[in-house]
Image 1 (tube, helix red, strand yellow):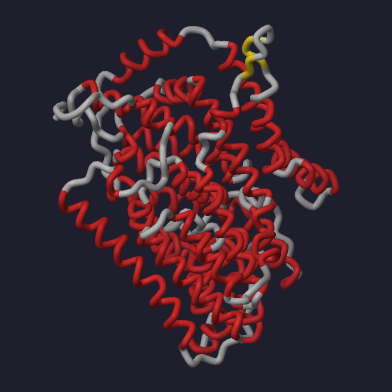
Image 2 (cartoon, one colour; image 1 turned 45 degrees about the vertical axis):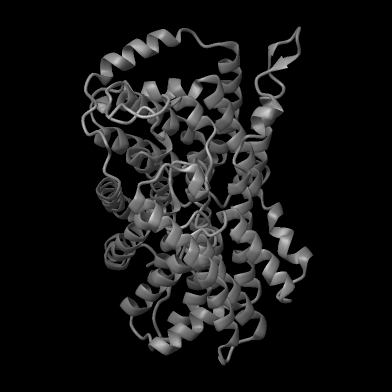
Length: 532
């Protein structure tokens, strides 16, 4: 297996990644090339066709809502089929909604100023420094050296998922993924070199297309979403949904009540996640024989921390501390306290990320020569395409709410389906939240769907607590597309997860997770007495 072409430089391949590559930039088999050509060619005619057909449908819908829906359907086709780079597909959609008069250019582009965009920029720059200076490699070897973890890819992926889930329960999902991605790529580099040294891959193989890499990075993204459900402060949709539910029902949900209710669901979802990722992205290597000796020798060869590594660690540590601090205050003072409100408002994760990244340009490695930890040329290599992509996702999320399209979809579907029981409304709430979060951020999904579900339940004479909480949980779903959640976008931006892999894994986990919420959440609410 070690024949063919020059030997791949694994570290350089992982550092200089690209989320979108033309067919000429990839090494594909004949069957893969036929599939890719067909998929991308189909998108060129299907996207405009879907848009035009929906625009011309004689349906009773507000003109702006129908236009937005038509454009969004076309953009989804572009994202799935990739006839153009995915970020460009989003930009085409933004241009179309302005040209077709849905909103003005100023209103359409305003969401690009979202703090989440700046979280991406700061986090990507920090990750670039950790990869360049070798700190990510150190972290990877530290996790691999944990007792028993480094003996199999299964244990490694599960252990990494557990770490991700626990962290994301108290740190924002985006921040968790941003801080752990360099470590994931460092571990992938170690495994890729093992495959390379043993002749299990061709000399010129692409480490960005290993199944074990996709499983590892998707575990990071999806695991953060699962862990984020565990506490009210784990994810923005939790706080939004909890506030709306408390306002509508008058029942307060305490921190402890939330955790007791969420823990069994999170545990079951984690088991489902492991099964989905390892079955659909079966690692090339199951047992990592000799890795313990390899890790020990490599850790010894790394030597002491360099000045650049220490500086990167300081910048990273400051950023992580400021990301965690609001969650610590919430544990002791509660999320209703003035202290938590003030601190969480000022320590916005986007602001913290860019300030942490800025430290890399202030901490010197050689003061006499005025050399600093990171140069702008290094920072400029981050994946700007992912930042643009998620910005377009935020735009569509805002427009779904502002134009009333989300409310129209929810109300029309509810009346057409004739929902009249707790189970039916809960199932509808979960499905709607998942579908909305697939094309917008999870925060937008909670803000849009929960206010739709509550009046539907009230109109049916049903306590809205169960369906509204189910919608809040399901809003953290949406695993199919890079725009579904910030953590999906970061995972896609790593270059390790092709869009087809994300869609295949994501839809499987969407279905399993939705079934778990629909079946288990009402039982848990009854057992814990939450909302009673």
